[in-house]
Image (cartoon, rainbow, N blue to C red; front, side, top):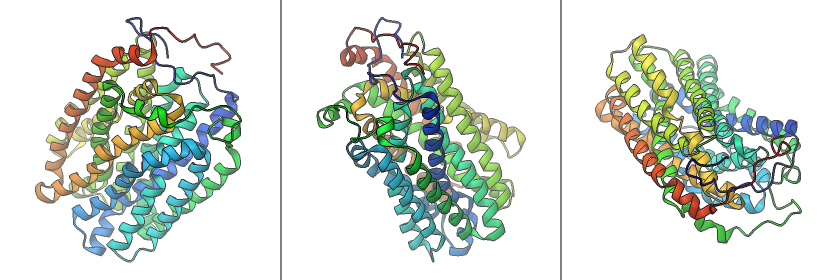
Length: 439
């Protein structure tokens, strides 16, 4: 990833260049990205039908938030053990099984008879989705050069926002035309078809992502303490989680906000909220690309990008939700949404630079764990709880304050990063990447 300004270097987590062609690498990325779309389509279709479920089953905002939050909770609880299993059992095999589980569970949600059954279905969706983000990004980064890490990580993780766009938008349209059960059914069938295609095309042996590859792999267990062996990597986990709290709260409750304060029906609210999710995904890509660009000569600047994203989201979102409903509010909220999750790429790149390649999926699982337990799970649930007591408008005026915690964590990580790299990676720089390695 290049040299640091102070003469230190990034820890080499990819000691060998990618062994696949550029064309196959992008095919792997495309299919992995499509599966991530399915992941979030199955997860976020629920948000589009909140008003229908609230009216049909007489649910409180807290109950609705729990149906969303339980998925992220299970992701947080299981992502670490399942990703560790993937590092040992095979990453591609794990992805296919995971996609099958969440797709079948989504079909189960379509036939739920009440809150209890829906909660169980969403619980199983969370089990299926638990390891996908961390294992999927490990597969993607294994077939591309190191210099593209933040850009690829931002683009891959933006699939969550784009999948949310499709889940909320398509789900809202289908639900309004055919009922909310069909919205879940469409998402489940898409996931099953994609899992079958992924199993046919992506192979462990070809990408070197599993134990089927006939190369010597270092033992995993001795590497695990390195997941938490530096202050900077812990700060990357915490800062990313705080920003995901804010991003997921917006993503989950924006359809309801537009329904209540702008008077939009289910389909239109879903489509409008999908635009905000699209903006958030675009921000992940743009901030990841900016991070890679400014970090070419001084990698520590990637932390500066993350700090700037956190502070800008605080200012823009707080200002926006303090304004009355109207175009000016939507512009400010859209700008805040653009940078709210822009920390995803820089944080992932930092975790990759500070942890060994042998436990790549497990390292990203730890990041996913932090994102889930600190952000994705409590974000929707806490927002729903506060909305029951304060109202959704007042709640949205308060929750941007979590970005202060994100900015503080990234600022602390920035101060210790160079020292941690010297301690973990040594003072000598890795050899520059050859043109062949850049393929």
